[in-house]
Structure formats: C-alpha cells, structure tokens
Picture 1 (cartoon, rainbow, N blue to C red):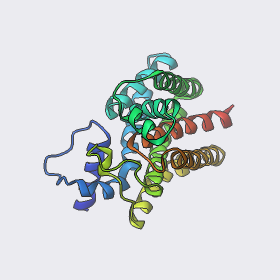
Picture 2: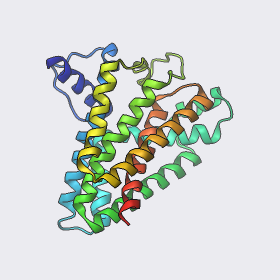
Picture 3: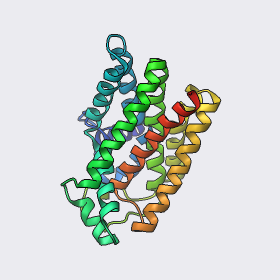
Picture 4: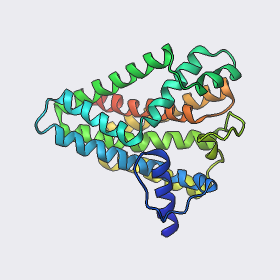
Length: 255
C-alpha cells in the first residue's frame, strides 16, 4: 500500500500542480508504473471541478459557474493538457513531415493553429457544460468527474499502445515512454471506466464510452501515421479531445 500511495503521489505531482509529501521517493523509472494512476488523478481534478461547479451554481448563472469551474481545473493542472493540445494543433496543422512537426511542437510559442484550436476547444467544453448545468448542476458535476477520469484513461491507452516518437531528449515526457505492464493497465482501466459505469445511466454511459473509444483509436492511428508514435503533447491532445467527447455524448443523449 505504501508503494501504491507513493506511485499515486508521483502521478499527482507529475500531472498536476498539487504539492506532494516530501517523503515520497522520486525516481524517473517509477513514472512508468505511476502512469497506472493517471485516471485516478482525473478523479481528483474532476472532483475539484465538480465540487466548484456545484458551489458556484448556488449563487451564479450557469455560464459563470462553468467558466469558474473550468478555471479551477486548469489551475490545478497548470494547463498541462491544454498546452499539449495547442502544440499538437500547431505541429499537425503546420508541419509536413515528422521532423518539422516535432520541431514545431517543441517551440514554446503558440501559432495560429494552436490558438484557434485551443479557443474552439474551450468554447465547446464551456457550451456543453453550460447546457448540462442549465438543466441540472448535478448532471454537469457527474459529467466533469466522468470525463476527467475517462479521458486520462484514453491518454494512458495511447501511451501504452504507441512508441515514443522522439529520441530521448531529456524532456519531461521522455521519462514516461515504456509500455505499461498488465497490472498497470488493469488498474488504469478500472479507475477510468468505473465513474462512467457507476454514475451514468446506461444510454449516456454507452454514448460516452463509444465516443471515447472511437476517438482514442482514431487519434492513435493519426499519431502513428504522422509521427510513428506519441509525444507528451499528443497525449495531452488525446486527453482534451476525449474529455470534450464525453461532454458531447452526454449532451447528445440528454436532448
């Protein structure tokens, strides 16, 4: 239990801005096993977003409650995944070959594709969550919790299925490049799927799981075709796209 707690804390410290205890033993090679807890990190981030949404919805309009809730989750993660999504839009949109795409994604500046993609992504998330919050704040809170867990399972699946596209360049993402073991995958799948299976009715759960699975496969094939593998930025893009897909699926079956 101590080992698993340490691995969870490593994942929490790696994927969020939440401080972790000083007694947690850090080592780069432990990150591969810590990735099993990435969907559980989604529980923390999604739970914070859900709780803040329910709080803000008590005294603010749905639109403001959603925007402030999104700000809470972005602050917790340090826009970690949003940054990866923007870089992926720039690289895949402006690059012609693997070397050019990787060079663009490594550039800290944001380009037209990244800016437009990020704005549209955040607007789409906000629009979907406002629709849900206007009908039922509790339903929107459940959607947040489910989406943050399931989308991180999607990123974990791509991490496991594809090789790392860059050579070991000393970047933060290069530390998590090895495929997960069978136990790691089982734990990640349980943490990612459980919220959707328990908290959603059968039809929304089917819609969410189907959309997330289809998009995960499509994005993995896109990564493989364009780059021959994944990068940290592309994993962030997978998380963002599948998170939005969860909201869209729930809205679609709720109309």
